[in-house]
Amino acid sequence: MSKMRLTPMIEAAVFAALAVILDLLPSIRLSPAISISFAMVPVFIVAFRWGLRAGLISGFLWGLLQVVLGDIYFLTPLQFAIEYFVAFTFVGFAGLLYRPIQTSLKNGNRKQLLMWAILGVIAGSLARYFWHFVAGFIFWGEYAPEGQSAVMYSLIANGTTVLGAIAFCSIVIALLAGSLPRLLKTNQAAWTADNRKAS
Ligand code: 218
Image 1 (cartoon, rainbow, N blue to C red):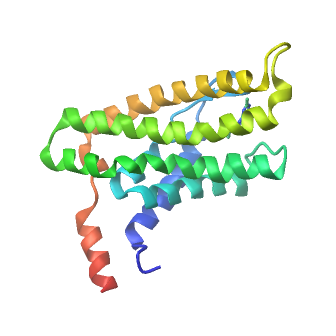
Image 2 (cartoon, rainbow, N blue to C red):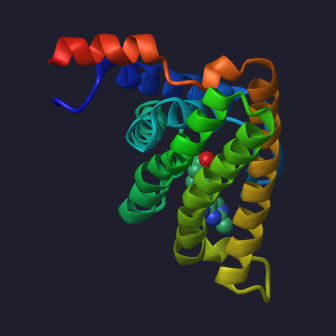
């Protein structure tokens, strides 16, 4: 636990809960398999503020909360594990862009900030939906229309969803980065306070 600072962990949990709430808002549901929302945004914020580890934990907690709330599609234990634990955790891979985002914030370079943040949105979204795609062709293939292979069905359904999610989340993150860049910045005061406590 020594490397787990308290502030990012609290934010990871609070923002995971926020993701659950955003997921309750009406989303664009094109079909049962295609539903586009910006619920990933809170996890992206955690990943950009604190990095990969906090992002992965926040994504994991979001999946766990959905399971606890019973808001899930359960076909088999493996499908359930892939789609609710692995996939949601992978949203945190947006945190791979933590360093360039923090550097852009420090330099006050808005254009670069926007570019790295959108790249983060793309990374986290693709990392998550890769798993929904895999689960899609292994477990959801029977829902494919006549004459369409399971792989093609999953690629179209999850590909459409992820492109929509990337567009939605990029717009929200761009608005936030433009109007409230401080929101994406590591909270240095809390960081040093936690480190002082730990030493
Ligand atoms: C083709 C297909 N249909 C449905 C699913 C299930 N799925 C897709 C995306 C996201 C989620 C998690 C809840 O939002 C689920 C269960 C799939 N993977 N593939």
